Image 1 (cartoon, rainbow, N blue to C red):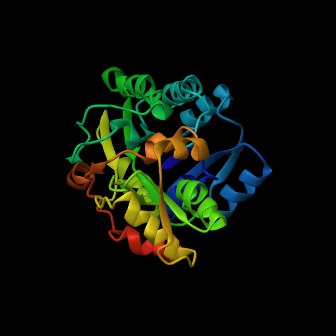
Image 2 (image 1 turned 90 degrees about the vertical axis):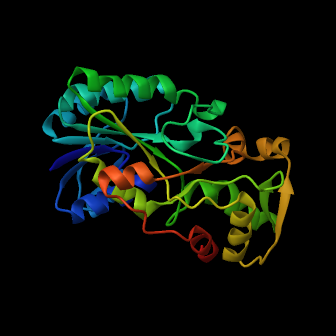
Image 3 (image 1 turned 30 degrees about the horizontal axis):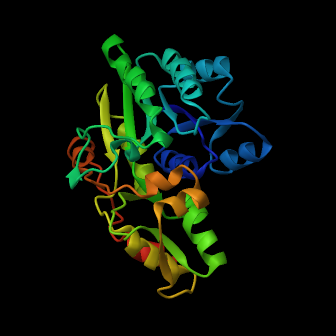
Length: 285
């Protein structure tokens, strides 16, 4: 298939391009600068210079493709929706895979699936109108698919490294919020890449929780991270207020208690997460 994607030089995008190319797909990737051009080219994708605000570029690229994957992180909900609209207009009846996040479910109160009600922290509340509009295309001949990803780990570990590993190493102790008994719905980056590829065959209007099905506590994750940086067991509780001061709005997301299952994607797409021991991966760094 001919696939156009945004965010190809990012954490998720690099893994997805690698998987798609290995499967024999022809990938064209949006690249906003020369560094991004070099990155996606090295991965085997054809670069297309532009940004999310270049709606005409997005539309034309989507029209050339059999499927589109929107992986780039927009600055605002309006920007995300405008980009999604341009690409859905372009790809027409081809598959359009949109990136969402599992944080929109808030605290899940036990193990939940895609039907759980939304209760998003302010950081991701903007996703609701965007996803509603994206999925609404299924009623008008489009083929939208939304992947609501859990907290990613493996490889660069972007969010976890930024807010936990790096500052924790500098401070000499890895933090966790409150009692640390809240659970994180983790998913390995390599499994996510396979999920995007599997989503090409999904039915119009499908929504999948992109999670690994293993939901360790935040405290156990902090302990594993302490091992990765040679600080065996040096972890400490901080209050949510302290976390907000250090991390900003993302602190409320890290404090969520989430347990999610990948059962729907397993049943409908044949996707089974291969990485089921996130604590060992986190401990290796």
